[in-house]
Image (cartoon, one colour):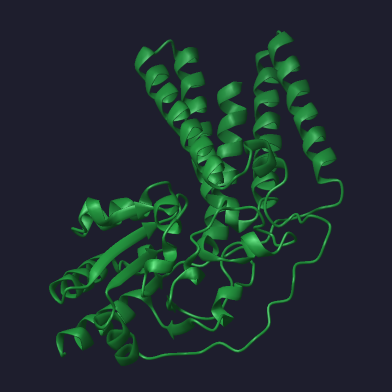
Length: 339
């Protein structure tokens, strides 16, 4: 029974999470009237089915209760995940991963299979630990993510973000990078999607060969899994000793001549600290706007998964280099080689 309900929630929840991350579904949280009451009603129905399943002596009726549980659990999983905003999807993914482990563990108990039980316990516990780490990094509680979520609001309206952004070109960015003494690169999910890690690694080597000190600042929830960007950078051959955590670079952000934000948005959004009514208010971010110059490399001026406008786009020390992360980094490499 436990494998049935947990598996159903995991299946539909994962499908909704995939849809949000792929842009198939709206990343904004679904907020139906009385959504918590609806969740409690479905939980009550599941418990009722569980009680009937455990007490019935009719095998056919027991199977019917399992089917009913799976159906209700599927709706519950979809509704719970749809009610969570896109900014919380990294936590949701690790949580669903944990659920799948618990479902497998329950199956192991039922089949009296020690191997399945052990593997399920490992998956479940590792997913739970990752969820805790990510919640801590986002200054959130797990209960707040599941039953609240970014995008549910604080009662006020987020401050309007106005201004005119400044666009730049590859030659101008290369000139700024080559003349800088210290450069910070902040990678995000856009870099991972574009598979631009190898091109960024080449750019790093070329800048270091010209005497520029290059470092990387990685947000704890950058990408869609904890450590995803760290793994990609390591795969591309970026030395570990120049990759730093958010807290390490925030302490001396004003010492960087140029910060290149490659495919990140929500993790460098100043509204998290400046606007208490923002959908990401309270989330620790990499404070790139404190650097001498910020270069944003992203596809468009659009919002991130949280659906929050980014005031950093319009700050006087920020320029926008719009385009695909891979194409942009390749262009920077080509232009830098020509100097």
